[in-house]
Image 1 (cartoon, rainbow, N blue to C red):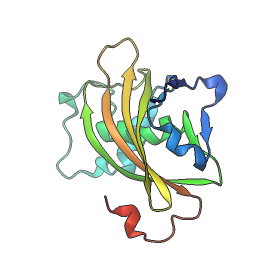
Image 2 (image 1 turned 180 degrees about the vertical axis):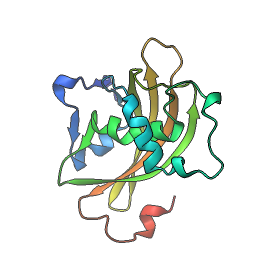
Image 3 (image 1 turned 45 degrees about the horizontal axis):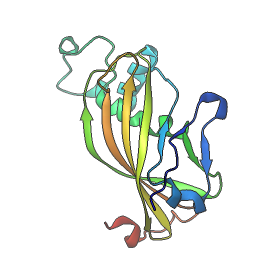
Image 4 (image 1 turned 30 degrees about the vertical axis):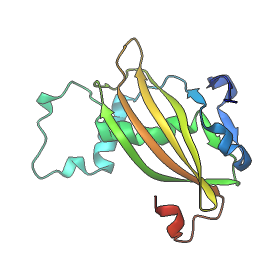
Length: 174
């Protein structure tokens, strides 16, 4: 019989949902929606500096991009922050490891100051080594728009805390 668990929405008043290791398999099929968030225009140059875009020897013609554009890799880097505001592994019980991204699409430009939020469905929670490989279908919605800012499928390996120190071939192979 299919699980008819309703979508989980984590408003700011709940400070997100914390899950235990035992609850990970039950996440499959669940949908989560985060709170609205905006990138501060003052943070744009910090990302360029941290990712060495400011040192690109070929330069960058900013005239071809919308003013105050949040660059695609900057948006992707926000996934962890936006996800952790909604769904968190139990502290000291689970460690999360970025496993990779699939099907990334930048659908419409996102500018600093525009409010966006992460909505995602947990497509899979598959056993992998001592942990679970979760597949999230992520959509960054932009307030007052029908088209999302971007979509991506994100894989994260959640293992018992302390298990991430060794190189486990079983965890890395698909």
